[in-house]
Length: 467
Image 1 (cartoon, rainbow, N blue to C red):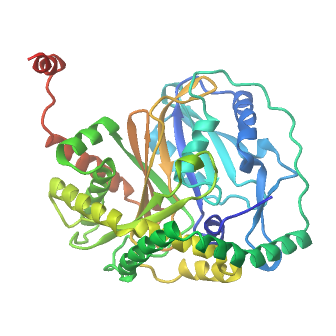
Image 2 (image 1 turned 180 degrees about the vertical axis):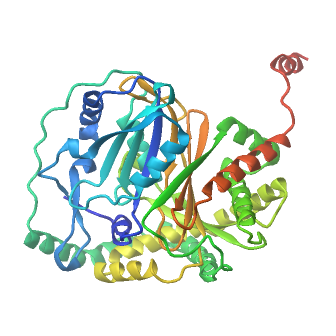
């Protein structure tokens, strides 16, 4: 029995009737479509590697402690695997609408917090796999690990059903309370022991203090914009596309990092969106940018190990090259400011706060007027080799990021097999124009690519080497 971390529990606490805290992926696969039995066999064979897929988050009475993961005695795989179809031939607009509708539905807290939808009827016999997983189980990096476990690196056929599984005994309410109280009594001792490990932690604390001083600037609200406001329960989803090779070409020619190029293109997209709405782009658009603090040895562990920095997207700059340079300078400064370290320390300290107070603070935080952050942009690198579902190659993969608080648009970026996909989530009622943002992202990248020097033909480069 494992207890949710403070950060994992936060994603349960902030969820309400309009902010559904599941992340997702949309994979497009080559024909022919799987049968339901093939899909079931594939997923069933992988369940032994993903413990959380057969567990529920069990709350502790009176919120004395954070919820715990316990085996679901009534686990039924068929509940989590769904099958649907678009009227043939289903195009991208129809698929995007379906994604928005499916992601608008909250996951059932009484069951393991995931679903997988197989969508038939796409053009040319293709089909899609839409996955929903609650954010309390995974962050962006561990969700990518989960994807590589569920799918295969080779075009293998679907395996047979996995062996029978016997759930472990579920602890009673009294036992959960006793364990929670015992852990609370132990926590101060563990904190003292951690502080006694001196030198490295002192340096870590110094870095955190530096970052917290910078984080204080985020308390200053940005000017009012249509990007913030109350949310409804329904979502829209769209996407923009790029090639990783093109982004790297821009990065090599113009400086910065791949992530800088991505953020600059998103800034260009938001500039176009604001102009199309009749709003002046001469403003601040502040984005929360999640940063993984997962060490290499923690890959394959399904939980949240994430902090954040706050970037101000330079939407006021018209020239795409100048936007990229502004992003490059700002991100270099943010990395040296230790904001991400400060965020990690703050989320760690949350583990020592009474869960009932945490719950109250988080719920209030999602309801007050929020103009400190205008959007969220999360960039997760995926596998740069093909993945397969029971022998069918995944041709494309797009991410879904949830919305919370008063943020009406979020952007998730995922790279897979040489492609980069920007998945844009919008509030259904207040952001019907997210396609403008997607078109602006693609246009910004095209403008940057046009400024890169032409690549010499392969034989010319070789001739220069011989000379």
